[in-house]
Length: 377
Ligand SMILES: [Zn+2]
Image (cartoon, rainbow, N blue to C red):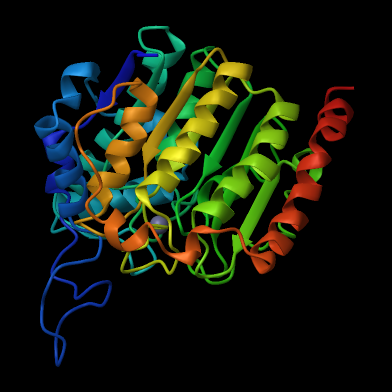
């Protein structure tokens, strides 16, 4: 079935400047300048394949606009916003943790990224499109209220959600984050909120190294509405499918959101230089199929993907196109050339040591229905 899929990409996202770091290490001394793992390449090559494959003709192009300072202030502290603004007006700087470099004008690009996620979600909620993918940069899922972290300056998804809530367009929201790193930003922002279900599957203690454990479940009325699935390194398609089937789907089904947001990072890819997972493009396709079916069942098909990480410049485009093909229902002629190597790997299967961890989080998912009743009573 072909669907109307909204698509956001802006050339200015490629101009976000992450400096001359060697990977994530600042160059200088014995460290030769190079480029950051977070460089324009992965996203421009993904956007390029969307055009060259012809998929672009089956998508609805959406135009990103900047979010305002007031939009940011629903999620971020004034201190953080002013710090980014001031550095951006001078020579650029860092989001706050030493791992979030940006160049002059970085504030404007970051507000355009949050605006891209907002526009994708707005178009879905207003019924202009069935679902949407926001290919934005910089990413957002590590950004916390008072600081940027891990390449993320502002929390794109929460900034979009809170603006839509302020506009009266949105109530209950579920966020599913499959980026290989922990979705610490949404966890922190919605820690006490029973109206926002946050679920993150990630490589155990990869980044941030001290967060993302299964026992981090939220507090107060928000207790139980944050679910982490920290998977062991090496997990592949089978483990990720099990996470959607056994944790995300039952939790989201019991939660009954108005819309599902997906923090879409392609760094669980088998080719990623920062993650140690083994997901293939068919793995991302299979997750998207499951999430779309869930949206059909619960939200009239309303689902919004916002791009996060993914640092293999050569594999990310094929993972991304697999997701966009699924959302739009239009299959291109593109075949993933990396499947020759990743396809036959035993890492694609679900292994008992991965199931053990998934079972812990699945128990928490089972409690959601009761918690929803308790909070609304
Ligand atoms: Zn990541």
